[in-house]
Amino acid sequence: MNNMKLLNVQSLDPDKRLEYFIRKVADTELIWGSYGDNGWLLLSDENGRKIVPFWPEREFVNEYNITHKYEYFPKEMDLYYFLNKWINGLTKDKIDIAVFPVMKKESFIITPLELKVLLEDELEQYE
Image (tube, rainbow, N blue to C red; front, side, top):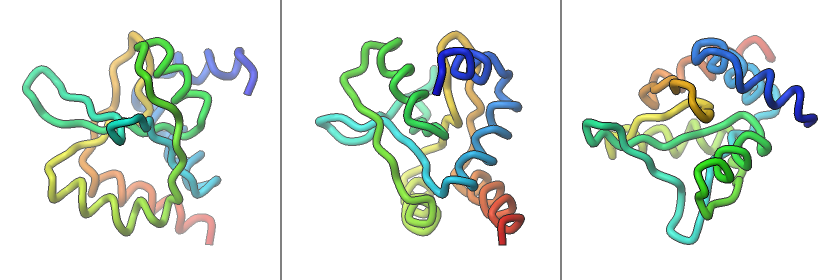
């Protein structure tokens, strides 16, 4: 991915980044997270709510980790594994999802079940 595309997509508002995320993840059937020695990157908001971030492409994970000086690396996950296994686990553990967070922009925070509905609706269009 070239730098201009990276910057253009990162400059989108949270709603547009959510749309991009849904389309790209459904198209590639991959979802990207940030993984390190202690497992998946887990964030929290000012109220202590646990949030795990996910991205549509490797380059965005790299950029996020570098910007925040996180010692994590991009890790892909099969979309169907995510939908069938992770959604239930995140819901049970009361962990929400930051969809495609970028530096100095608000993130779209969504429940796992809400994200599942959006992704499954998009996937139906590919069948």
